[in-house]
Length: 284
Ligand code: NAP
Image (tube, rainbow, N blue to C red; front, side, top):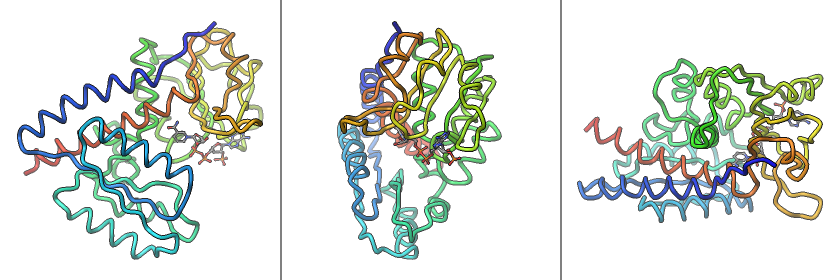
């Protein structure tokens, strides 16, 4: 049986450490603040935003929400981002995805000032990640690497297979794993024989969004399995991408859903807000 990687407990420990840092900043009169923008009425986004606000509360980060109507124009959205860029009291800006279809999210991300890019989605952050500079790294990949390291699993020289190539998970994860000297393979919807690749994985990370996509025959004995997916299974229960019950028997380590990657993602957002606050202070 695999060791279950407890993202919930680890995230709690990280939030407690960040609270100490946040308290120290406050003693110096510096109040870290996150602004979250949500457009429209997406029920999943509402849950994510609520969880982010709770985490801010726990760490002591000030939190403001901008709930825009579903018919908000690109100009209105970008004008809000511009105002938040100029607002000296705001240290981090998060634009919650998805946006309604008429809006261009990549164009909106480009408007976020690099120093407030706590999600690591601006072209500057992504470029810096690619060339190995210190930068804001997208929270889910950052949380995955932190969790692997906290469990003392060495990434260097390992075959890491990533399922999914989205801008928020798969692509930045490629760079994070390369930085740690892994040999990285990325699979996506056009990959011919996914199993051929996954069976070679020492560390398999799935970010596809399909319940029970990763079955035990796709997994090497003793592999580390990181499940990013957040799906509903056939009974409406929250589930990852991995057939947990069967894969757990073959893996050495495995993350559960819920309680694995999800809480780590939010903890890394808190980490990035504190990082942004400190970097902005240094420039004053
Ligand atoms: P996304 O933008 O929809 O990307 C999904 C990726 O999976 C794409 O690269 C797609 O390939 C690939 N894919 C889809 N079906 C496939 C198939 N049958 N075979 C192989 N590849 C396939 O999704 P995302 O935003 O990255 O999110 C992925 C999952 O992670 C979702 O369940 C999401 O809710 C979850 N998530 C969790 C967290 C967390 O904190 N736990 C954070 C973010 C996302 P193409 O590129 O070829 O289309």
